[in-house]
Image (cartoon, rainbow, N blue to C red):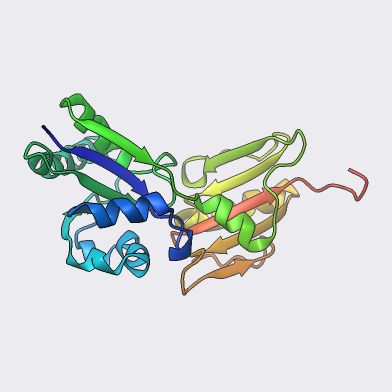
Length: 232
């Protein structure tokens, strides 16, 4: 029997937002993979260990996948990660790969899962609370009402968007291109709120595009809403 690879979301930052299932999987399995060069320094580890202190006693796999736009390098890193994980799966041991938010939303885990599936192993995705749902709740903002559309964009890759479609927008991965993103937001005429490091100690909330600093961090989540009258 071979092991199963679980891709488990740990939520956006607040350890109380971790699911019972993610907590149970960490407790029941000895091999925990974390995305970064040093497992205990990863954000996912720092979140999860607060909810599951026994995580510190597990076998931690450091799965380093540096950010790059070079697709060949990305593929090499993902394949290398799959190699590390496969060593345990073929011995019959399960591996729980912890990832921020939900593993189905812009997660590096998904690329590793494809390699593992192609090699004939079983995988399972474990949902976590997404950063944009947590940020909306934190700021008391609705993401979609009645028949509103919701558009989720990786802002760093969509700097040509003018946010002109009807409905509301979520802009993820905005940090590295914040100056350009702010110009788009100001031109859109939308109501803007941003949460930086949602649920973490360094959390900051900004209530307009003008308030947002140009050097905002990587974990910056923007919600841009259509302006409506009181009668809408």
